[in-house]
Length: 544
Image (tube, rainbow, N blue to C red; front, side, top):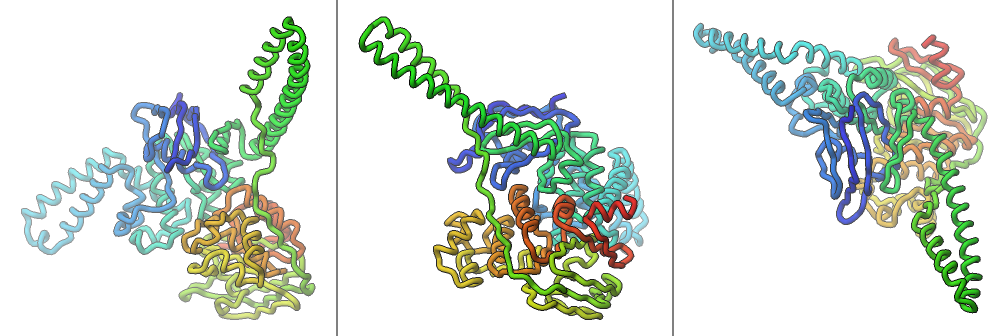
């Protein structure tokens, strides 16, 4: 049964067209992946579906009494004084009001003034009993159980349930926002990058949740493994139009290439036919000038060519603008890094037991583990950005380290990209502009303060720094975050061609399987174990 229908829908912003004349059906029970380059309008389409935005033209028809939930990238600051559990349980405004009322009655019952007044206590107890009856009738205990189950599945520690939202980290706030939407269980679940800041265990849980969800799910994600394991249909938003592919992400990639090649063949055949007819038309015009009986055939030929041009197959773009990444660097010594008995603790909590590690030139190693296990801390220790609590770290001969920071904190936020790259390496302004152009920066963005760039633009700027510093040992902390899929694929290609050494933290299983040849896992038992293969190899060895 149909949930939403879009008919001839167009959307403009400030005179700029985002998409035009979109016809789309979304049905009950579907699992749909929405893909497209950054800026193609994916989030705008979600806002149209949920009713936050209205179409410039066209009609959007929704099933009567349909409920929808939209995961945004930010949590409402008005929620900051509430606890994690309070926010996650807010399945409706009426339910949230009831829960707040119950908490207020509990505070009244605990106050000395009420305890000292039997009549007041009886009044409060009577109101509390009625509120509990309403709570049970609204499925409150089921909601509470669901909230705990979802928070646990996403990896939120129990001790944070009563923490105020405003006291959480950015990643924790996004996790709470995701949990809140999942607990609501709307008919249409719209998830915009739900896997950001989730570790491998949480991603696996989310995959299962989406597959088993009783309603309809539409998903924006740059995680190709997540798309492959959850969706049965791909909507591609490109050049203001939507194309539908019935299959998972791998099917979409293959089928899209087949369609593009077929469209190019149709285009070339049509162009050949138009040229052939135009040659014939030239001859017919010459004959008609000499003999009127050819005039009718000439006019028919003109109309035929005109009809062909009106129905002309659009020439497909086989190669779109992509990042141009070159990570060539001079060779280092054979032994790149040697770690002996390394260990550390944060606030008295041991992150991992002492371990040894030797990295040789050309190795590509992935570091995996749950959030909070110490992956980023380990990279910072290797970079001498924070001290170790024990052990030794030795960098090999002729090693030039390049660091990609997950939180972008190593970028000079008050500088512009143009000034930044010119300080990294003595290059002229035209050379710097050419470099940034290859990284898909517009002329305006080159002169914009880095602080005001998008997450994707900051990520591309960090990649530019790796190129300019001639690093032969890359330490990468979540390098695929904020990049769209075409940019991730370019980065993967560059890393595969890179002859140096790579040590990368990532929760992107597709990326890890493609890039790494060795895996370092920080386990829940705080032991560091090495596997001589990629992430899937590690799972296989663990019997998972």
